[in-house]
Length: 360
Ligand code: NAD
Ligand code: DAU
View: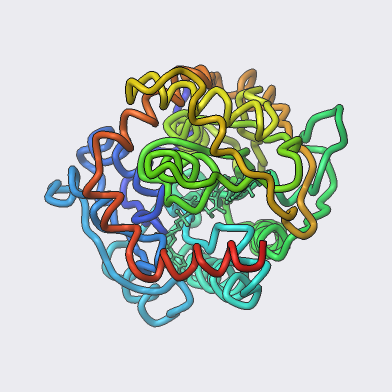
């Protein structure tokens, strides 16, 4: 792409202490040295300031502990920093937790997004009528499109059909974002991305969960027969895609992000555990025996696959990690960061894990 449509100057990042938000901040803090970047995060169980250690003292970065539902706080931040750019990650993100506590998801994902939009719209209408000077980038998921059978891909034409409380709450958020674009003309861009993996992912999601369980030689729970398919994308490729959308994306547009990294959960775990065995010097494939089939997740979406051609052809984005190489660097990251793992696998994590297995 040659023409930059939007220059991020004063940026509000929400949920930047979580997995993807932290990886995004690691990219943009050095990339935009003259910008002011404010990270607003509630620090739920998934938010962790250790994820941001490398950039916490950067001149252009500031952390604010708070909730996106807190209108007064968000208004104060907009007044203080005159944001031109919002990148909205903050959300409850784990499907299994949404099955047990759906209202938490409605609150942060739907009410939180609507609150943020309200303040952003009021601010934008008062101070920044030039479309290109303001941009609200909403980070969403392919789960809003429901489940695929054994063929086909999600595209920007796919109708919404969310099937879990998490997916429904993200779909609600997406609809609010679109409604603000249609009703008030707010310059928004929506991103729907497939499954991410990489450094700083909380060990409740399949890949880091399998790594930590294999390290301690505990059973690795695989729902049903492990035949469900996901389209795995390295988190840094996702973050590059988001920066691309921020600068070159057309407002009002939706972009789907994925890497054609489709594989079944069982195939994925076999590759992952083989790499882990190699890195640990264990006999190759010896950790496969830890794979344990358990009761299926209720409403488990069978397959996700993404047609990312719009992002590739119109904005020039391409993923740079292959699945095998991305998994290897991810395994190495977890092996090199035992203190990070120890800190996140605290008492509340252990209680959550126990509750998962007692129902399985
Ligand atoms: P995460 O759970 O690791 O992090 C979420 C962050 O949001 C945490 O730091 C948490 O403290 C913060 N947060 C939650 N509620 C908040 C609130 N009310 N106010 C302020 N902060 C709050 O999630 P993630 O995996 O990094 O996902 C980030 C975003 O990307 C989410 O919107 C998710 O739906 C979307 N997404 C995730 C994936 C994936 O594979 N992980 C794929 C596509 C899209
Ligand atoms: O597709 C994007 C979505 O990917 C994001 O929007 C979500 O925030 C993110 O959590 C992820 O959702 P999934 O439900 O696909 O991810 P998870 O890692 O929980 O599960 C991946 C697959 O592995 C899924 O088919 C369920 C299965 N699984 C998961 C866990 C936690 C197991 O078999 N065993 C497990 O213990």
